[in-house]
Length: 238
Image 1 (tube, one colour):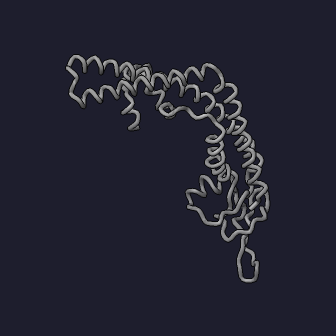
Image 2: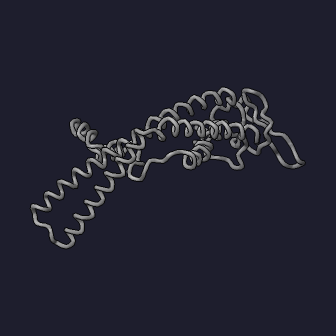
Image 3: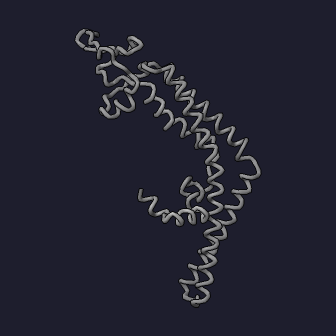
């Protein structure tokens, strides 16, 4: 296993994510428009929760007449629409930095792929499933002549993987243990990138943290979906 190669990939991913989070914080999350959106969301959430609690208490006490109940349900519907609209506005503020960060990581992938294409970056301590090898762990490794078995350490058979760039110099017990750059890159994104985003990044407030779903709950989007004969439930099924 080439530790230096793995550390290089991890450091590139970590530095890119930290830079993206800092820029997003300076250019978006510390600006007044974002702060106002969050404040509006908090007010709308508080108003909605308070009204829903009041209606629940009145219903429990059976103190509501039909007219009062109808009026209160209309008020709750309005409060709910304002709440969803405010949540959608906050979610939109997080969407642009997220898309730009994804574009940067796509560029980073292409750059690193050029450098590590065809190279065995690491040796897995296990033999992954064939589908994992095909699409992830061995992707980009073109075995010219399969693998060459050599006698090493007296009776222990080892293998050196021959790729398009020559011998990788990794002693393995099976060709399937050879690991390409893509597998390490994906694992790094799922672990290091995720942890940095949670620690350094700015997370949307609870209730506006569902991403696309928060935007789909916006009454404006709901009307647009209904005009096409769709709704959230039908979309979620697909």
